[in-house]
Image 1 (cartoon, rainbow, N blue to C red):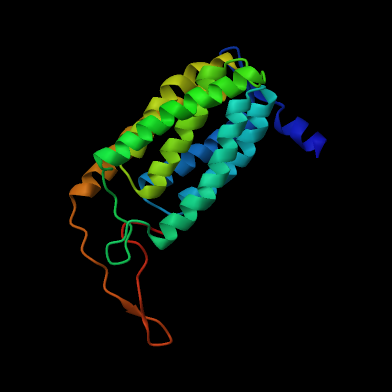
Image 2: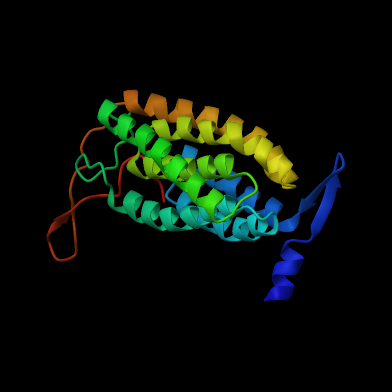
Length: 230
């Protein structure tokens, strides 16, 4: 196992003097794929995001960023929750998952929760010396959790949350020796803009209730959440 992790964190290639390791590259490619699938509202986005988190745990461990490792553990846990959430439809309209803007109360809770969580986690990192960059590391950790919760709820604001996380994540990735993470944020940015537009337009489209379908037992059941593809 240790040999596999050593190889996974080995150098893949060099770009403009920056060393790219396998775990950083593979994990971020999975992450890009998950973001693209999220843009298309495919439920497959969640298992792919889970795989990205598993691989990036190794990358952030090699960079000694506890917040980065914690972020990926959150990604793994929330991916399981989001997968379940999208499949059953949390915001139901006739059994369908509605893509919508969060209410002002929900936005306030998200912002306040992110702020309080960032301070608490940063102080924890500082006290136990778990990160060489505790504040940005904590911000990315908590911001990722906030973004994924918003995504699981089907809120358009999740795209804005990802942008806010990326603004800090790019310089931190380069300064931590995770060059590929920094480079792919350019593509993340383009996908986030495209995804934000697609979800925004989705909120304007009529979303009629899905007609009930009959199960083999003769009882009606809800159809697959509208807008979520399998």
